[in-house]
Image (cartoon, rainbow, N blue to C red):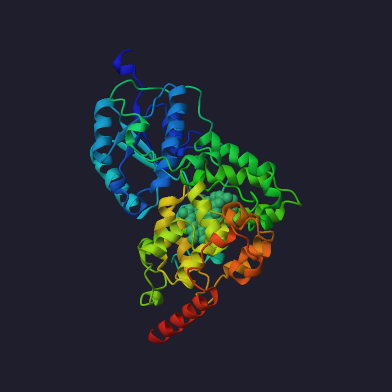
Length: 479
Ligand code: FAD
């Protein structure tokens, strides 16, 4: 080919947008007629608190393999490199003769700052650089109060943000993409060394199918069955009653607007309540990103400064080991912790109960639990995890008041009334009647040999509650 007739080349930098369909950065490159150089740069040291945990890395490995396969089938192999990002991208540009670079935005504070530096530097190099919203219904900075300030409470945020949600035309990726043969081909996914060793993630993959195809499959399953009972079922941890789309959304394997459009299209009079409740949950995800953008310090600092002097306790290494092993002796909490360990995910209701127990009954700073979730959740997401922990600890923007303390035993009786979830994850308790599974220490007469091997609770629920309330009262007097 005559070099002058070569199509211009664009680097498409994949990050947490591991999909081809509805990918604004890829669409911009393809629609403008560029030959595409798809690149992934592994640079966790540049991501600050957003640097992925171990379970996320296990998911990412599989998701990258899926993406690499989809791109290879279209004639444009994914080129994977180890960072640093800017130097790597510059080297790719130099070796491919690219004149443009496109990516979809991320919102973690350190990543936002890094991306701004990269954008500026590449523009100074003379490149066309464009970034896109590939993961949110609205940009975090585009919703504001009448006074031009960020929202701190969900309901007014939602009222203002919801009408801005727009349908987007689906973008289907062509069967072939214009390729560029120049430049280095990068390293295989496996060379990133993200696969856990030893393979503690083996049990995850019965429950999950990482990648774009798996994301669309999860959406189909949700639409065909789960959506119908969502508004009530979403609080029942024993059932598959939620979409389980969270890791797919975190890794950008499916666009939220695609999910929203599909759920909305399935709307009927009977389903109205379920569709609205689900949209609101997507709204909480948007709100979490709004807060993260405007209050980036809340990744490590209390949103509510009133808690800065709160007398948090520090778990001993033995206490923490019992959390990791799901042996706190509080059945619903242990069921959740074991579900997390075995599947990389925990039901939302149980996340709230676990979070409440650790931050209130045990009075451990929310950062302890947040860090554990960060490392073990396949959907670990800096915006959602920060919001979730600060909400549950009562230190957050729109938070459960600190004095409202979930009782894990009554929560279990209410949301797992037959004790099925507890029996599934804490099999030591499967042989005793359901009512004894919620708080076995209250039913010594109903215990069998196996359930007697289950540990006594780390904390008495009544005493933990009283101590938490007393600490709150003392801290309020000091403030
Ligand atoms: P669905 O009920 O089907 O909801 C659909 C989508 O809406 C989810 O995939 C998620 O993207 C979003 N969503 C739902 N609930 C929330 C919420 N409360 N806040 C923000 N977004 C929400 N979610 C994460 O994605 N990553 C996290 O790291 C995370 N950490 C959490 C920590 C704590 C202490 C708590 C209480 C909640 C946390 N959540 C987190 C929120 C929620 O538990 C999960 O999003 C949800 O359980 C995922 O399951 P699903 O996809 O089946 O949810």
